[in-house]
Each structure stands twice: as C-alpha cells, then as structure tokens.
Image 1 (cartoon, rainbow, N blue to C red):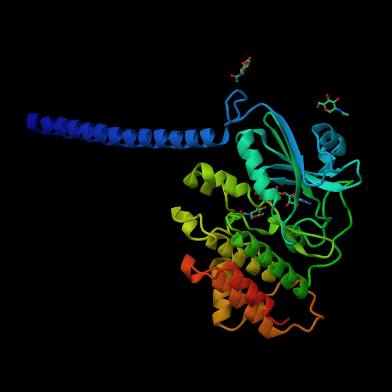
Image 2 (cartoon, rainbow, N blue to C red):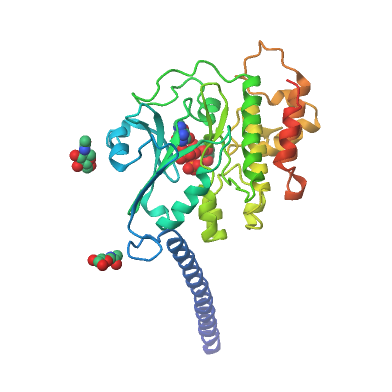
Length: 376
Ligand SMILES: Nc1ncnc2c1ncn2[C@@H]1O[C@H](COP(=O)(O)OP(=O)(O)OP(=O)(O)O)[C@@H](O)[C@H]1O
Ligand SMILES: *[C@@H]1O[C@H](CO)[C@@H](O)[C@H](O)[C@H]1NC(C)=O
Ligand SMILES: *[C@@H]1O[C@H](CO)[C@@H](O)[C@H](O)[C@H]1NC(C)=O
Ligand SMILES: *[C@@H]1O[C@H](CO)[C@@H](O)[C@H](O)[C@H]1NC(C)=O
C-alpha cells in the first residue's frame, strides 16, 4: 500500500520531469527559430532601406534623366500628366509599385511606374542601374524613357504598350483591357489565335536572348504572362527586366523570396542553389510557353487521370503520348488550319526549356533558332 503510493509519486514525478525537459527543448528550438527569422528580416531591411538622406552614397539630390531631350521629365510634369497620380489612371499594380498611364504635354503617352518608397536603395545605385537599363534597345524589350528621383521618391517612365499584358489576354478573354475610364476600354475582341500566340512566344524568346547575350547578361528572374506586354500589333515586349536583378545584388537568398512567381519558378529555387543563372529564365519561359498554348495558369492544378500533376508534367505526359494537340486552349479559334506537327514541336521545345536540371535546358539563343524554324 505504502509502496504503491510511492510508486505512483515516483511515476508522477518522473512524468513531470520528462515533460519539463521536453518543454524546455521545444522552447529553445522556438527561440532559436525566432532569432533566425529576425536576423533574416534585418538583412532584408538593411538591404532595401538605404535611404538615409544624409548618408554619403545617397545624396539628397533631385535628379531626372530622359532619353529624349524633348521629353522633359519632372515631378511637376509627371504629377500633372497623371492627374496627381489619380487612381483612375492606374493600369497595373506590380510588386514594385503602381503603374499609371500618363499623357505628357508633348503629346506622348507613357507608362509611369511609381516605385514603393521603401523598396529601393540609395540614389547612386538607382541612377547607375537606370543608366544600364536605359541603354538597352531591343524591339521586344519595353523601352525606359526616363526616370525621376527625389529623396525617397523614384519614378520610372516607360513607353506605353497599348494592349496590356498577356495574362489578361490569356485568362480574361472577354474583359476590357483595363477597367478604368480614361484607360482604353475597348473590349478584347476575341481570344488570341494560335499564330498570334506563337508570334508572342517568339518575341519573348528574342527579347530574353538579347538580355542573356549582353556583355553583362541580365537575368530577368520573373518571366511570367503579366510581364509580357502586347502592342497594337500583338508584338511582345518584356517588362520589369532589371528590377529583380537589383534586389539580387543585396543578398541572394533574400532575393529568392522576391524574384520569381509561384508556378514559373524552376526546381533549383526550392533549395536556393545557383539561381543567378540565365537558365532560371529558360525554365520560366518554358512554363510561359505551356501556359500560352493551353490557357492554364501555371499555379493551378492540372489533373490527368484524376491525379494532380501540374502544368509541366502534364505537358511532358502529353508529349510522351503524342497527344499534344489536346493541350490546346479550347478558346483558340479553330477555323485556321492548325498543323498538328507545329503544336508537337512547340510542346517539345517547352519541355526542353523546363528540364529539371539547368544543364538539360537549352540556351535562349538555341530556343530562338528552334522557334524561328518552326513551321506554322
Ligand atoms: N509600359 C507599360 N505600358 C502599359 N502597361 C504597362 C506598362 N508597364 C506595366 N504595365 C501594366 O502594369 C502592370 C503591372 O506592371 P508590373 O510589371 O509593375 O507588375 P506585374 O508584372 O504585375 O508584377 P511584378 O511587379 O511582380 O512583376 C502590367 O501587368 C501591365 O498591365
Ligand atoms: C540630416 O542632416 C540635417 C542637417 O544637416 C539634419 O537636420 C537632419 O536631421 C539629418 N537627418 C538624418 C536622417 O540624419
Ligand atoms: C495633388 O495632391 C496634393 C496632396 O495629395 C494636393 O495638395 C494638391 O493640391 C493636389 N493637386 C492637384 C492639382 O490636384
Ligand atoms: C494564380 O496566379 C494568379 C495570377 O498571378 C493569381 O491571381 C491567383 O490568385 C493565383 N492562384 C493561386 C491558387 O495561387
């Protein structure tokens, strides 16, 4: 009886001790994790907030630059041209800030991107970066016309690309290009034809090939349908290049949280290895090809035989089964005589681009050759 009680006390005692030890271990782990994330956050803050106006590398200067001297870009002019940054003139909301449609007094229509004030570094870095980007000239790259910097304020002025982004054209085929009044309200007449889609993809390939082929290659890092803008002739113009790279310089593992969009990111993003490689763009480009042919968003599930396999594996399966034509977006007008072998070749190129390993993926220059020699 007495012994029994002793045993119970001992049991309870040891139970309590074990629980306390376990709790202590868990607590230590949690604390460690917290300090770790806090440390990461600090890195991020330091990397992106170098805007102390008194620090030597960010002199408090107002500065503007424009490619065309007739385009006098100033804060007053841009404020006026955007009706005081009126919400009615917003044409896009990107991760770096809002994009406005603006009519300059010279009669030119431009796109003005107002960067979020806390997202960018000092003035000198900004100016240097803009100088590099403004030298780029390619038909399939959105042209930077100028910038304005003042204190923490950073405005980028781009040529205005009329027909909005490819994402809208693929996924909202009967909605206005932009929902607001001044901004073009013509309805998108019909879904993009197969020929137009291939042409858009070719344009993106040429633009990327140009960026990768520069003496100092530029990796876009965020190739996706909403960064492909279409002009009045449905020619593709790549937007947002260079911005992701700016962030990269500060800290590569931080940048992986920012650059890249779910669904387009290559497998190596998961372990953060070797992401500063043009082959990350090749992968995203392959995903964009699959999205463009099928009208499927890359971040949504694709079911085959009841199993969710995702867009990339789906394309691979369809290629293996020689049923690539079944991938075609049902919205593609079918009156055109569609060559099955061109769809097959297209899907084959997309599958090459989305190879698991970087070394399995072709260079963009090779992709351009393959796409250009594809018969329609
Ligand atoms: N030069 C331009 N001409 C016309 N519209 C533009 C222009 N630049 C951007 N836009 C519109 O603004 C939208 C947002 O552009 P932005 O590139 O900043 O962001 P995003 O592509 O949506 O996202 P992220 O910043 O993550 O790349 C674009 O999708 C497009 O519809
Ligand atoms: C910058 O310098 C000015 C005058 O030299 C001072 O008034 C101001 O407080 C300083 N600002 C910061 C952020 O240090
Ligand atoms: C623009 O906005 C600012 C502040 O939001 C305001 O002070 C100014 O009067 C406005 N100007 C015009 C022309 O609307
Ligand atoms: C997929 O991406 C689109 C466009 O980027 C976004 O609007 C949508 O919310 C995403 N859906 C999911 C499930 O993540």
